Picture 1 (cartoon, rainbow, N blue to C red):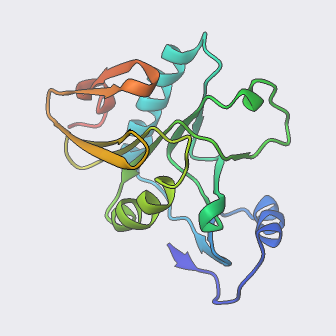
Picture 2: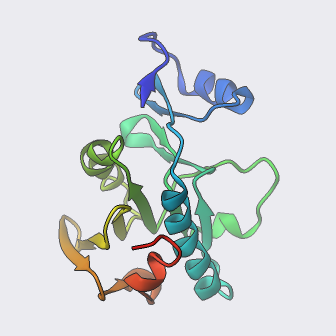
Length: 189
């Protein structure tokens, strides 16, 4: 991600700017960062996960959102665009055309690219873990069948589950299982 400038802007200024911008930007503590474009493989992986989650959660109050919805992390003064996000926040049951921000996700999925992997593993992971509602954070490689699940354990701990090849993604918080073969379907991996 590239910084627009080193000027500091308020969250309100960011939201006004972002509503009119043809390019998406993330916001971290007064700075805005342009989002890079995603590869087709990245997009296919995110869509495979989102579609499977949507099908699984259809009869539930949980909502599945893809990369165009902002996530607000108040404790970090940040707005991010996760690749896939699930929120079971009751206020999302009555969506309006003006709803653009989620602040209580249950699960966040980031599809890693060479340019974003470091940010997803460090900055975003640190910020996301501060969200009390977050139960699982999933990192999905796009160049090989490899998925990492970070699952909240109790009030302060996180466990890491590493999946490869023929393993199955298990999101305990959503009672959801998906074979890695289905995550990577249509990607050539």
